[in-house]
Length: 167
Image 1 (cartoon, rainbow, N blue to C red):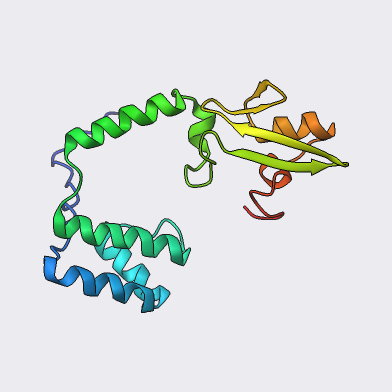
Image 2: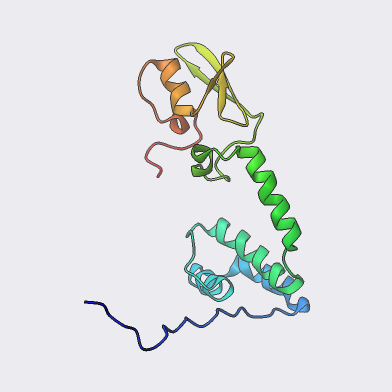
């Protein structure tokens, strides 16, 4: 049996963001550091129209600072956004594995990671496509850690980029 729709589905109302007068920007930025987490979450909902992505205070203050300035002074031009996206694709080469790694966690290309294992110092270089150890490319730090130790390791934990038990 086919169901016929007689009325159009209602579109949710467009989210509108507050305009922030330029003279208020500095005061709002300073107030972020003294605001409670509940206030930061409320501001996030108001300025982004969504629930906070993280409850990390430093992250929230940083993103809210940018958003306040963006709403007061204007954001990036569409041409700049397209250019940045194109540059991002050049950097990660459309590699799905690299995209899954949060960019703020991934070390910059060229970074050298040092780890001593059983009295031997190992140096891993972060490359555009992954990692390099002893002149050989690896897709992940876990693969490098496995090559060094012969056992399965979380590469981020092995190289000290994340503490044990962190999600």
